[in-house]
Image (cartoon, rainbow over all chains, first blue to last red; front, top):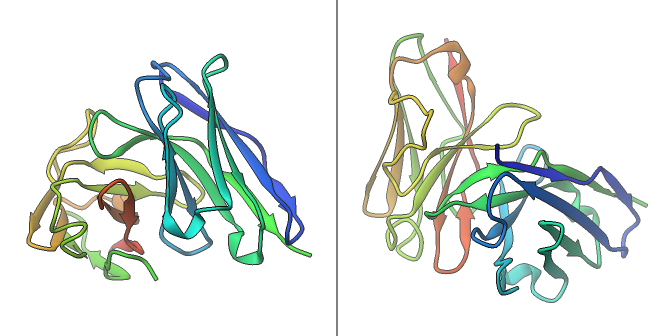
Length: 118
Length: 109
């Protein structure tokens, strides 16, 4: 079955970087784009960006341009989300999600909690 | 502040129907037929309920239906059941990006 399994929770100091992994299985990794979404406590989701694992093309939400990098490793069918220059506002649960053969996210990772605190 | 606007909460009695509205802009909801809806229980990841405004993924009951008029999309839940009590989020493609709503908590009375 389709699975997206993310790395564990992180606690970071302000100004640091975090890198979260998303290991996929059960489908053709290079056929589907992967989106990254975050959700702060009590808030709606916020789209961060997407990556096409086949060609490495990426698209980032404007507000994260310059401090967000998405990468993909086809040998391990894993995508990575790196966010730099962390502030307390980046404290959220970060999700990876498969973009289906339509304009929706049809499979999600379990989420990775990132806490930014001094 | 989310890009799409939803009511914070709606409630309905067991067996009745509720509708959740999702208001956007011509650059998102109004400009594309790519609205999706997600259901989320506390502590869990969102689950896709509706995509492309009206379509249901395999396994989603037909009690859930989507529609759109202009810049506003809607999710209707008929025959409310206890396990429909959850948070619901709308999302729309917005031209190489996606936007989400702030979420609606559905309470089953």
